[in-house]
Length: 446
Image 1 (cartoon, rainbow, N blue to C red):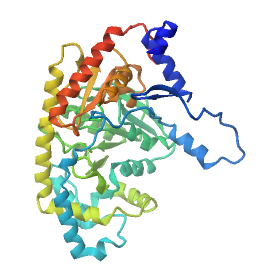
Image 2 (tube, rainbow, N blue to C red; image 1 turned 120 degrees about the vertical axis):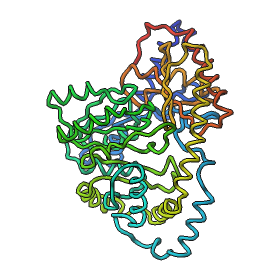
Image 3 (spheres, one colour; image 1 turned 180 degrees about the vertical axis):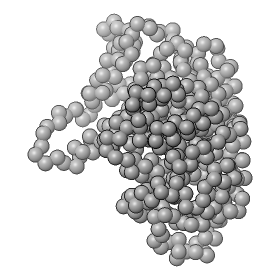
Image 4 (tube, rainbow, N blue to C red; image 1 turned 60 degrees about the horizontal axis):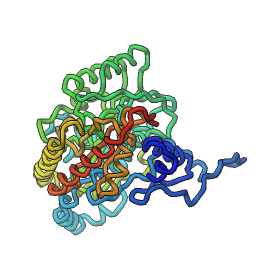
């Protein structure tokens, strides 16, 4: 770094200064270009007799800020948690949609109901029954993807309600609830899911939540799987302390080993399950589901009517046909096999590095590895170097405010060709060793 040479400070101190200037808006940290002075200087907010819409927008967008310099495009983008484009069944979807429009065009292009297409709901409920989740059509509400599902659930809660979240956690989940005046508590994650001792401690202190938000299967970002024993105890605690559980099941169909029972199957009256077809089929269909007791869905349907009225009928009908024809199950078998091969390739590549670079646990499913940088360096510092060499990843600071998570990183293998995985891991390993040789443990982490 030029600043390091000019003023005689170590690398960590220089980076800390840059970060503080970035937070205040004086500079921008650009991958591959270094640090530059912002073109638009920060402006002090002034009081106004009539708050403008832009002021409100700035307020809400800052509830959970994301680093503006985070690279989203790289030659080897371990940062992107998206399905491989080649696994989107383009031809099958096109053929189904054409047949549907030939047969049902007027129905599909007209208004439907907020409750959703009964044929899709029946087909999806049947699929879930095959997985051991005993639900009927009346338990299924189609949504515009998982993001809308989270937003709808947030809207049935009361201002000031207490919510429990896992930490670390995907920032998109937090953003869905951050626009509302909820009180929140975070529960640390362990290798087999949330720390139950911590949860019990909060409950025993009288901290009784309205909602506990969990990702039992292949949690984002850690890839952790909630153990069967913990699933059973959470179901019991939900009944004992009268709270609801939001089960984020977006990755639940992407298992590479034996799957575990859904929380919904363990306590159906207290779990709101959110599914999505974005990771498993095609994100452009914008289709997800909320699966919950009909009494809970009554409130969600009313809110959905005021939100977007209905989920696109063509997307629902397309999934209805793909499920009923048997294609959906065959498709899941195929993509699980391909993603499992990628997972194994990443595991092998990480194990081939010199011991002591990264520590990790191989996920049982999903898209992610959660790596700890054993030398303790900041993952954002590593990202600045690796991205200049064509490799990006998601640093732990995107998923947690805890200082200890700054030395963690999430690698997503879903969109990386197998032949590029080893190359990317080698670049990360080399960059990490270079930084480790310069790292000074006494530098404060911010």
